[in-house]
Length: 99
Image (cartoon, rainbow, N blue to C red; front, side, top):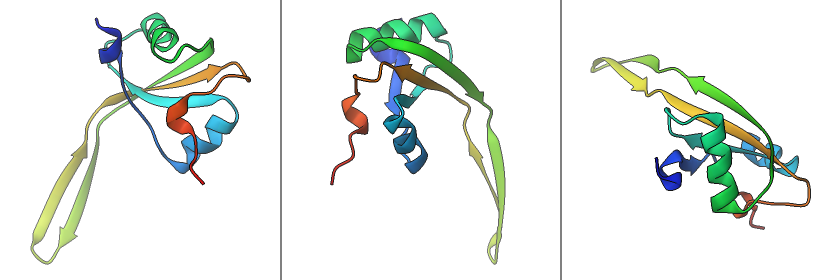
């Protein structure tokens, strides 16, 4: 598997920015990737030293909305989230807050 297919996109939210200040970064990764593949991809793409990694497999979630026009169902797809801890003196540019 190509390293650019393993890491799909960063998760940008208030909670992820608070974690970034502590040296932890959140990314959506490929569902079939292992921890070791994700660590190697981060080392090559971002040139950082990974201390630890936590993986979350999030299941699909359905939501029902009732309106005047009827009942609608929406589904959030399954995805895999990785929270990566790196050394304190290193940073990843995607999470730099613009002032």
